[in-house]
Image (cartoon, rainbow, N blue to C red; front, top):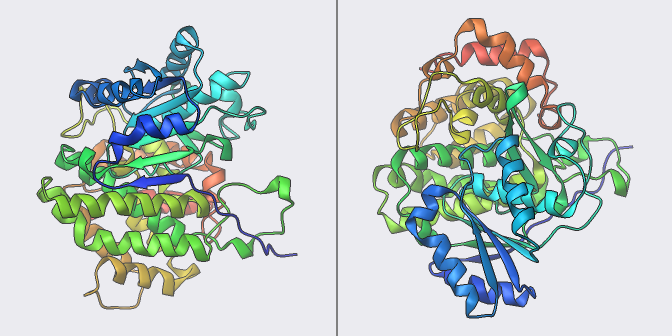
Amino acid sequence: MSETVFTYGAPALKFGAGASAEIGYDLAQLGSKRALVVTDPGMAATGLPQRVAEQMSQFAIEAVLYDQVSIEPTDESMRSAAEWARSAGPFDAVVAVGGGSSIDTAKAVNLLLTNPGDLLDYVNAPIGGGKAPSLPLLPLVAVPTTTGTGAESTTVCVMDVLSLKVKTGISHARLRPVLAVVDPELTITQPPMVTASAGMDILCHALESYTARPYSSYERRTAAQRVPYCGSNPISDVWSEKAMSLLSTAFRTAVRDGSDVLARGEMTMAATFAGLGFGNAGVHIPHANAYPIAGRVTGFHPADYPGDDPMVPHGMSVSLTAPEAFRFTFSASPQRHLRAARLLDPSVTGDDESVLPAVLTALMRDIGIPNGIDAVGFAEADIDLLVEGSLKQQRLLAIAPKPVEAEDLAGIFTRSLALW
């Protein structure tokens, strides 16, 4: 019997310039008296997390700041954060201030503070145990300072598992923040390559959820079997389409001129809308491919990111195989792929599988994304290992609109060595 039910979940949302100045009030409404504030060193250097913490004292809330989140967090960095939080606790709420790294680390810390076991017990199978949290988590308030990950809206926590050299995650409804506080003013200082990479994450969130396997194509699930990623559905479609429309006018401007307040606001709204879409429909091949790309990089470090350790930022890694992934999925839903291309570029013509890849590569070239996986250090000899890493992301590949086998992934990676 085919599925007839789809689910939709989202945090409460406070959006707009100045919204971050009200977090103390919002926490007081949740009954908090002692909150853990989670951020990274770069964000701490701006003083913003400290200002958020100071506001809380006006409402008799003690704030304790953890400012050692790793950019592109690992299982080890998340365990370290959780150990620190255990020693500094107890807490009755968690506040994440920063990009996806801070929000995802806060989700992991929250999970490990409230539930027994190790982080890998909860990581998606087959990499981890795939265990569901057995106990409620603390209220989590997410305050994104980058426009991209949508982590403030989702049930997902992403990390690199160092021992396996693969990026993966944890997904459960209890990880979703109870409140997302989205303030466009916090993104003004985001540099060009961070804006470009994070923006490609927004775009792929919207595209992947819009082209995902429809919820009605699955076998009927019981209530206990329902998962946060249920496939494309009428509500997620609305959010995804609106996100793409906003990106069509704002993305290039935000990368070129970060001080453009209108473009920054539209990028922030696009990130929120895309998060509300993919946080329910799910993402598929580009994200599955991104995890081994990010997990196995050895000789590339992008401009505008701190440090000099090898890394491919998440949004960049997602984008590098996206054009060829959507060429592959075109036959499953041609009209959706063409509709998406025209939302992103209303001037586009044509009706074949090359239309959406052409729109994507033109955008990537304009905003400075590397030309394929070769440009971040991978060669044809690495394809088998990348395919192996992607195949471990079965939770995501199952959402693709058509079956994906090893040879299909190998073809996508091979054609993505250079995109133009």
